[in-house]
Image (cartoon, rainbow, N blue to C red; front, side, top):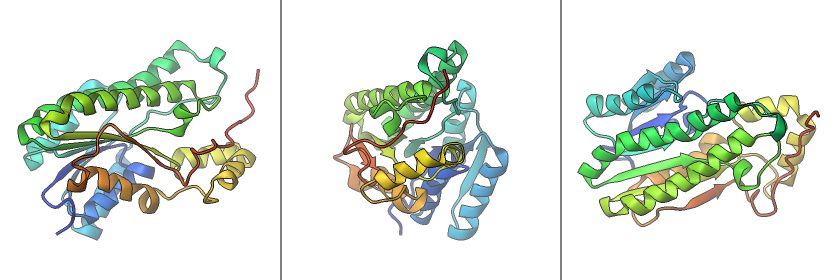
Length: 263
């Protein structure tokens, strides 16, 4: 019996990076999974992988988290397929562009708002009635040091992630009476986005890793997902409204994030 046996978890952005790492860890601990992912190939691959390796019950659903009806459909699938929803992991991000604040377009900022913040709001609203009825729920939201430290060049990401932290704390305060715990992870991990950043800015990325107190950037499954497991478990019953920095200590003195931004 794993820590999440008889639990059902919905993970957005589950096809790669941190979402995939959490899916694998939850599957290993006995959870049934709904994997919401925009990329059908990686989403299906993750579902097949956890079923094969861990014997997990896993359903993939094609989901653009910038579309409210698709987010709500993922929640409905969990309840229809498995009869309940215990854990919601808000992980998906719709992507952005590194550039100067004064050059950011309305469309780009609105895209960040919808995919980074409203997507989680929609999912949380849809999940709430089921978690309230059960008297038990866990909401795990992936945020970022980019917002905490106001990293340059990523305004749409920064403000959506900081909005998520406020949203999570508000849910923690309002929903604690129903046995629902809502917490945030700010990770430092080698994800698809990080790899792309490294390719474009190798010197800055290497400096970030070197400046980390542990001297490296974390692994999604082995360094991040274990904390997400705790936040989804019974052991988290008295922990809510918190931000956990799962970053090797990078938040202590900040990190070397200063890519060159053209005028």
